[in-house]
Amino acid sequence: MALGREDPFYNMSHQERGHALIFAYEDFCAQGPSRRGFAKHDVDICSKAFRKLEFEVRIHWNLTKKMLLQTIMLESREDHSNRDCLVVVLMTHGGITEKGEEVVWTCDFEIRSSELWKYFKREKCPSLAGKPKLFFIQACRGENVDKGVCLRRPAGMRLQYDGMSRENEYDMPLDADVLIMWASYPGMYAFVSSSNYINGSVFLHFLSKVLIEYGDNEDLATMLLRVTREVAVSYESYVPEDDKINKNKQIPYTVSTLMRKLVFFCPKYK
Image (cartoon, rainbow, N blue to C red; front, side, top):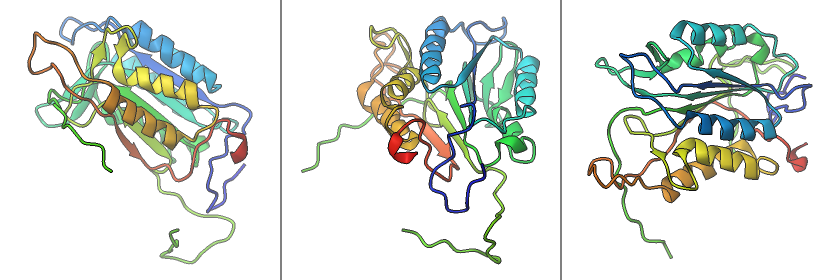
């Protein structure tokens, strides 16, 4: 079902919701980063959230660089014509190279973060063209910290075209319809917590919580604002033996070229 140029909502009424690929990393090679002992908990809560949104969840554990890239490439070559959208969740370690490149770890090597979504551009995955492609990345983006600041509580666009307007067809940018949400701001830590109500990655805890609680009646943008606010306001790190890490804040970081509202179930949008 093709969307019109000015349709305000994505079509979420295909035969299938789509795939939610979860790439989970717990163990790494000897030269790699430390073990992520809370990975299973993160997988469990994310799987629950995306299954509630009716995705077919596919979980991949501790893939090598070659296997990860092959899995992503094969997914991009599938026929997604009868699916609403695509979700990719990555749970791993990450950081910045000496050259300033942002990378994430597979079990044996680092890869550039952009490797996760470059295969889903329109020319490489035409059956997802015009459909939302959502990437959620739980990984540190550097070793900087944010001590936060104390705040006191305070007391229609006209479209223009550079060419001739066409009623029944229109061109789309290659990078349209993508959302990438990181656990933290560029250069910053992404924290984990062993407190009773989190017990894993802070970002994935609040992401899953919000999707489960509000997925029935809110659009995605509103839900992700909730996630950002919950992480930023409700969490502060507690590592009293390390002054640098102790009492720090975290805020997710979202980059989006989504062009329409995305609602999974809300009747008023149907």
